[in-house]
Image 1 (cartoon, rainbow, N blue to C red):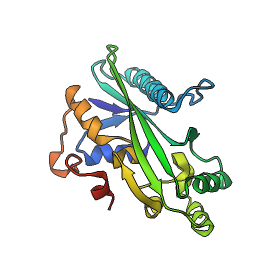
Image 2: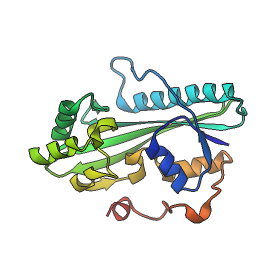
Image 3: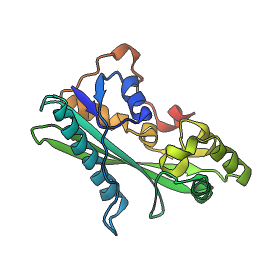
Length: 212
């Protein structure tokens, strides 16, 4: 059994589209990181925290120790600055102004864990390029409300798609889960796709082809 330690609708969507059957548990953890921790080890640490908290909740609910818990965390990194979820519309506008006309990295930490102590963690990186965005476009996008629950104040699968000129790497990683990597890992952990007919094919399709 696969257990997603997240209530993110985007992560659930990606797993369903890939044909996985899974349960979800809420994983509430501190997202504070030690001063000076770099983004890659930081996002890995947060993903592991979420997986461990999710496993604890799952076992309390009567889950099996052989069940596989998936924890994930996504960061947007501009130069060395981590852009989390904006606290308010003004902060969202500031983030988008910073991303305008720039290249940035999207990092997703992925942690797989079971009750026997088996743990696998990885960080997947995707490079994203934004075209210059006008002040009006930014205000209109923030006014839509979409940026407010997303790292970096944008959703590539939504209204921000028009801001992107190129991506290098996994598109689904930017949405919330690097499915190309994750499908291989889940297979190795004995988690099978149970709805093959409806799953979206991720292998063999470049990010640019999927994006356009």
